[in-house]
Length: 98
Image (cartoon, rainbow, N blue to C red; front, side):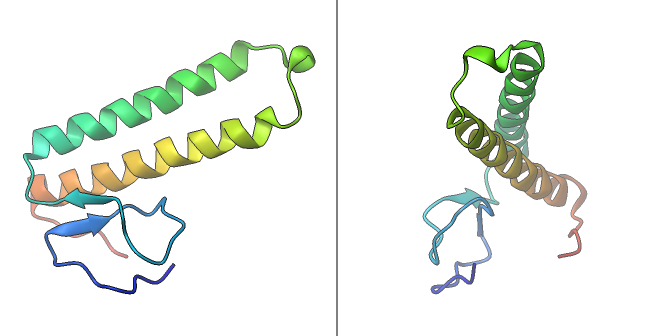
């Protein structure tokens, strides 16, 4: 989605947003280790949820559970990816292609 009010270079919008503005951003001047830890938390939560789903029986689940679960997985994975990209750019002073 296009961003109506561009942010200063310091703030990187999360790509998981569904609005035209960027209410959730990454402070690119934050400590890279903190950014990396935030990414690890989200990716680990995503991985743990996928592992739970792998071991789970869906016979007792509701059909509405699937979109709820996939939405949560998308948010965790996309935010983790965005955070990793910012951490990588900071640590290596490298800009990933858009």
